[in-house]
Image (cartoon, rainbow over all chains, first blue to last red; front, side):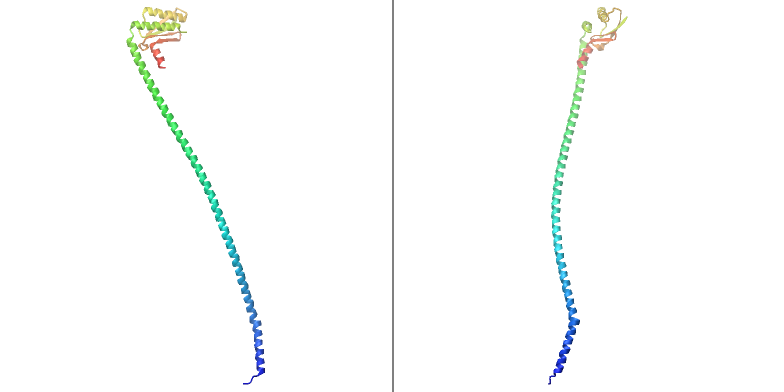
Amino acid sequence: MEIQVTSILLQMLNFAAIAGGLTFLLFKPVRAELERRAQRIAEGQKAADVMIKEREQVAELKAKAQKEARQEAKVVLEEARKDADARKATLLAEAKAEAAKEREKGRKAGERERQALIEQGTAELEGAVLAISASVIGANLDEKKSAALIRDGLKKIAAAK
Amino acid sequence: MHRVVVTTAMRLTADLREEVLSVAAAKLGSSEIELIEKVDAAVIGGIRLSIGGREFDATIAAQLEQLKN
C-alpha cells in the first residue's frame, strides 16, 4: 500500500476546514447558549435565594407578629378580666345595697304595721276602758253624789278664767 | 238678757239652780240671765255650762275624754 502525502495533506486541509466551519457555525452558538443557560440558572438560583431569604424574613415577621398578638391578647384578656372582676364587685355591691335597702324597707313597713296595730289596739282598749269606767261611774252615782259632782264642777268653773 | 245653757246628767234641784245662776252671774257680770237646762245621761256626772259663747265643761265624760287623749 502506497502512502500519498498529497492525499493526506488534502485530508488534513479538509478536516481543518470542516473543524473551522463547525467551530464558527456551531460551537460558538452552542457555547453562547450554554452561557446564557448558565446565567439563567445562576439568576434563578439567585432569585430562589432571595425568595428563601424573603420567606425567612416573612416567617420571622409572622412569628414576631404572632408573639406581639399573643402578648396583646394576653394584655387585653387581663384587662377584660380586671374589668369583669371590677364589674362583678360593683354588681355585687349594688345587689347587697339593694338587698339591704329592701330589708330596711321591709323592716320599716313591718314596724309601721306593728305600730299601727299597737295604736289600734291601744285605742280600742282605751275606748273599752272608758266605756266600762263610764258605765261603772254612772251606775254608782246616786242623786247625792251627782249633786256633789255638780257642785265640784261649779267650783272649777267659777275658778276658771 | 244673757242665755246660759246648763247640761247635767240629773235634773237640777232648786239649790243647785241657784248656785248655777250665781256662778253664771259672776262670769257675765250681770244677773239678767235666761237659764236653759238640759239633761243628758251621756255626761255621766258633773256639769257643763255654756255662757256667752264660752263653754266650761266639768263633766265626768269630759274628764274621761281628757284621760283618753
